[in-house]
Length: 264
Ligand code: CIR
Image 1 (cartoon, rainbow, N blue to C red):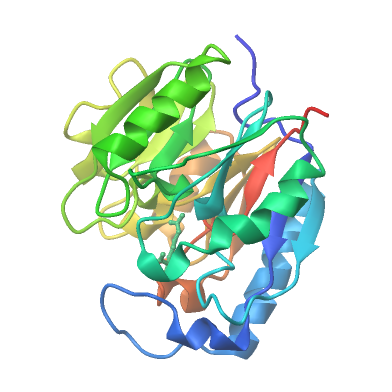
Image 2: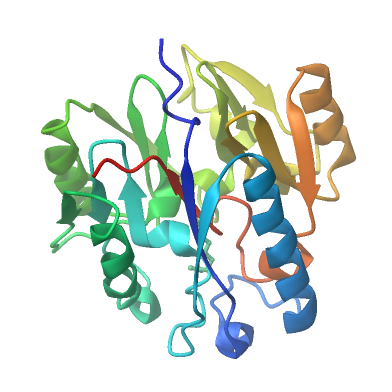
């Protein structure tokens, strides 16, 4: 088995704009503090670099308050990149701003043309398949188009229902290694990870599920000590990053970067 689902050379991040305080959120839990968010963002980029990433830092986009959550704009595979078609109306212009960076790094950049919608936060790539969550942002036609586009590179797509009230599929799960998924119990209860080893987030620590594996590191949000301990026991090399401000906008570790190994 290969390890291409978490072994990467590159990451792309975008700095938060002053407009981030107007970002989308399911429930208003207060205005994000931009200064603290910038500090957390810098810590996050440093952690990616420590894990071996060449990090490309893009400039803030004031017209797009949620544009720091770059993961939703594209799917980056070893063979090529696919620009998404976000379901959130205020985010539909974001992929076009990601396109020039990706065309500079990949020989092949495809595009979800629609009419369906799909966001990167709903896509989890494992060694054996691409799991795609159907959510309020990702619909059947979006999944269908992604299935068609990735088939040319030999990928199998499997659709999964995202639990009601959960923003994206990866809000509730992440890949830890070739065979292991970190997941909330509410997501894993459907049996969607059958055949994988599943580590459940500790009770009351569901937000820890949005973590990332990058090379030898697992980067997880700070403040979830029992889940961090479970990962330590599992021998994962964990780095915790403050996420209090992005969490107010339903964003976390996976949303803040695109992680990949480009093929020129
Ligand atoms: C949104 O609602 O689109 C943003 N406020 C949060 C996006 C989080 N992205 C992700 O989980 N991939």
